[in-house]
Image (cartoon, rainbow, N blue to C red; front, side, top):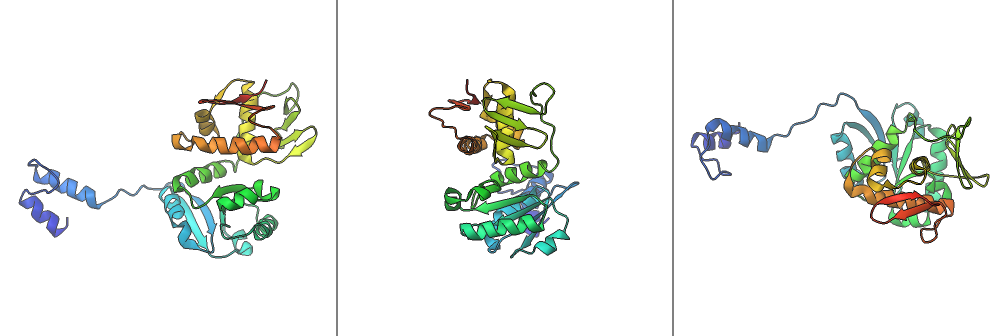
Length: 271
């Protein structure tokens, strides 16, 4: 115990209490204010994080390491090095990139690595991103570190495809709704025989809605099933991805053909 704290205990003068307490209790309380319990990480996942400006991702690194992720940080792209470092996810900060540079980077990563990627992008970048980039996992940054944590956990959990309980057409690995067909074996979506390129999140949301066969699915349930969390503050994340899914399907919220919004609750398939 620090000398100052010991003197306070011996004098029975614990400054944060309005009543007299025992020396042992005071010692315990003083100790608790100065020490934090560090969790033991029995299982870890490894993340490579590349950013030209590392100080703008410190908050993200902290929350990841606090949750038992091993984070290795780099200033620049080194694909040949990454091949020799086993990892579960590569996070690349492209907040300072223009659209062309980001596309060039995407192609380099696809050619040189087989890992899952998450791109940190600016809000302005999202509005003008090319279709090729919109197929990637994107996260607006700077943002809330704990929301980023849920994205990381979700992406890594998809590394081994999870068996989804969905309704199948008889004798087939496909499910059909109107002119949409989902090939579950290859995780492909077609609209009138034209492939629709969806992210894993959008694909999972579409499967959940199709499996529900018109029943309403709440935002909270979608958050739990797709992001594996009950973080209530993240329900707006569901809306963002549904909006993107609608856009790719050519659907409109005002006149829905595929997905209907149930105000204050969630979503269901259109009639």
